[in-house]
Length: 180
Length: 110
Image (tube, rainbow over all chains, first blue to last red):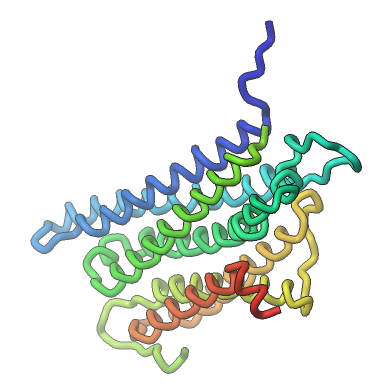
C-alpha cells in the first residue's frame, strides 16, 4: 500500500522552516553565547585564534543557512502558497493564501504575517552576512576589539529576534493553512 | 562618511565597519523599496512570476546592499575608521528599514 506521509510541498516547508530556519536560529544563539564567552582577558593568543576560527565557521554557517532559508522560502515555498484557486472552488485547502483571506478572522495572517515574512528575513540574511565577513576577515581581532565585538553582537541579536519573530509567524500561518 | 575615515596607528577596522554600515544600508534599502512599491512610485520588475513582485523587491534591495557595501569597502579598507558615528548610522538605518517593512506603516503612509 502506498502511503504518502509527506507531500513534496510539505517537505519543502519543513526544509525551509525547521532545517534551515531552525538551524539558523540555533546557530545564532550559539554565536551570541560564543561572543559573550570567548576571548576573555588572559586567554593565550593561540587559544584566542582557535576560538576565533570556530566563531568564524559558525557565522558563515548561519549566513549560509539564512540565505538558503530566504531562497527556498521565496522561490520554492511561496509560489504554491500564493497560487490562485480555480473560479468557484469551495475547498481551498490546497490554496493557503486564498484560504487565509477567505476568513476575516485569519486575514491578518496574510496582510501582516506573510507580508513580513516576505521581506524581513532578507534583512536578517544581510546582517548575518556582514558579521560572517568580519569574523572571517578579522579572526581574533573581532574578539579583542570591544567595539567590533559589540557591533557584531548587536547585529546577531537583531538577527536572532527577527528570525524568531518570523518563525513564529510561520508557525501561525502553517497552523491555519499548511502547505500539504 | 569620508570625514570619519582616517589613517593612524590603530588596527585597520574599515572593512569591518564598511560591512556593518553596508548591512544597515541594505536593511534601509529593503524598507525603502517596499514603500516605493506601496506608494505606487516604483515597482521593481518581477524576476520569477510564480513568486510575484517580492522577487523584484528583494533582488533590488540586495543589489543596493551589495553596491553600498562594495563602495564603502573600497573606500575604507586598510583604514582605521572612527566607529561611533558608523554604529549610530548602522542602528538608525536598520531601525528605519524594519519600520518601513512593517505592514501597518504602509497603510499609514499610503
